[in-house]
Length: 286
Image 1: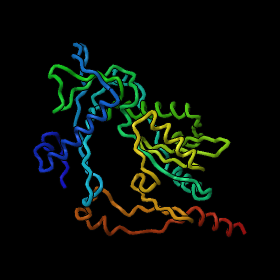
Image 2: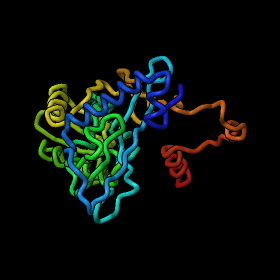
Image 3: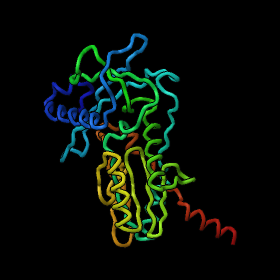
């Protein structure tokens, strides 16, 4: 399946109806958060251009057509269009530790997704963006942003700060080891949240606390409840009574046919795990 690189390609393709539906859904998600107002561009200001980005998820059997209007943030000027840009993401070690804690303690382990995360977050600078092709209210108007938009340099940081602030209001404490892990200890049990941009893993010692955390997030953001964890960052999870197995056998968006023989015939080596290294050290000391 071919993925269009522009709006014109999308509307001229065989799947035009599906792409148009995906574009409509993206605009509806944006308008739900009211991230902009229409206005004329001030003479001393420059509007940031935008671009439609398309993707197909879910594989050939059940493809899901996605479209998102993003700003071309590379044209922003520091100190005028944005200030800070850094936004942390959870460490892979934190994901492994969280899964291990869930297994050891018999905790629930579920996940949620924030629909249109960035447009929830307020923007601190005066930014104007050109209207998306096909959705122009008037050719003389532009968007004056009230909230963040995908593609802007500061949007990730703005979203992280907003979510962090709200989790503090929910009595979650930020981990000192990982700024994207949040912990809530209560008399009735423990709840942990791990955040990777707009994907959230929730581990909880009881269903009551799990439902409470989910309800609070839904009250503030446009959330999608994905239930028990099954896939996160391309890693598949499968839980049994005794353990949680992880696998990464899928190679999304990778055409093996086009890979060179040199890449397919790479030499495999064995790397000792941390436990093996510890055992070897203990034997050496003895």
